[in-house]
Image (cartoon, rainbow, N blue to C red):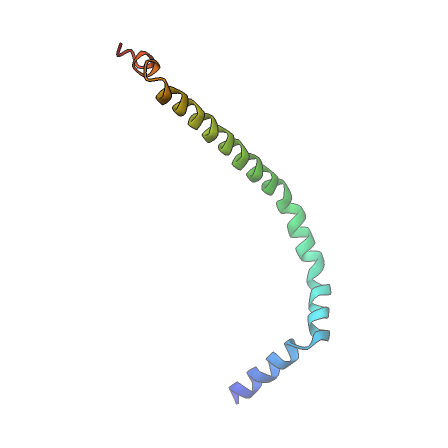
Length: 79
């Protein structure tokens, strides 16, 4: 009995008309949620970009220090 009821429910939910109705019902809710989340998404994208730039700058500094080994001991007061 449970299985037939589940199958009937799934058949009803898989129909195109029900899918369309569910989309129209939940559309305002999803739009509201997305509008509320947008500022946080922008902040996260900005922070990821900033972290990328900082890591790139650190890489450039390390490469320049390691290429010129004379600078390396001077930078740490070793020579």
